Image 1 (cartoon, rainbow, N blue to C red):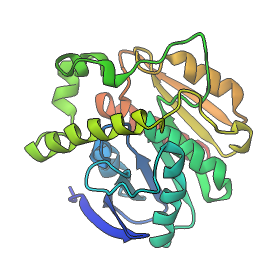
Image 2 (image 1 turned 180 degrees about the horizontal axis):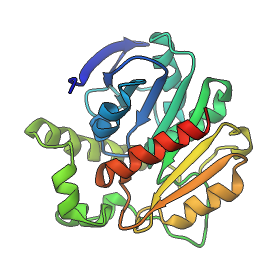
Image 3 (image 1 turned 120 degrees about the vertical axis):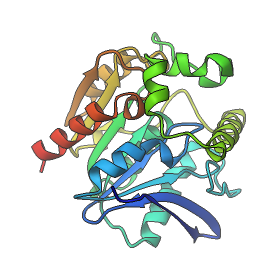
Image 4 (image 1 turned 135 degrees about the horizontal axis):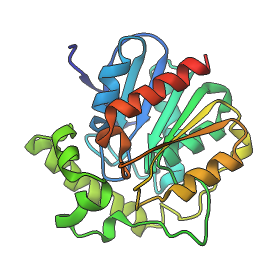
Length: 259
């Protein structure tokens, strides 16, 4: 098994750090609030035989800087495109979980011609006033895993986060996510025109997601022109880590069907 490489590059004066493996068409995976690109280790390994797979630490998370001009979530998609431009990547498959999915939606809406396929894993990409969202920051750290996934034992067996450095980065990421929210940078109402997203789109959800309930996935599917919703039983908010095999197979089937 090839070893995932961690890379760094200064873009517009700030450091971007990411995980990368493979060659071919580009796939970019974007982590959720508090996480790092390492969350997608299983996807990087699986798809690297046919794709160039990249999973960045988004600005302020992991080893990536958060420059002053990135005040909120809406500032990340333009920065993401600047990073991809610096890597001479013109077109990509964009995928994201939770906060990263919001970034993927906005980035795809901004430059739809550069996104061949869109993959959203548990994303609040639409406003549903009658369906409450969970707040990860309100969860006691001692019960965080239980709230985020359906089967904590399975998750702990599969999680790629295993080192002291991982623990430090996740702790710092929780603080970075809180700062985004404190500064009004993560709104409960997404500002994305879903009609711009005509590319093939896969929506992946865990039926037991208590952070972004399945109703959001169903509403997105109904509101998007070319979206397909796949629901996993016995899975919570982090399907790529809690059910990596099912996630990889669903993505592979989606890409094969929409070649």
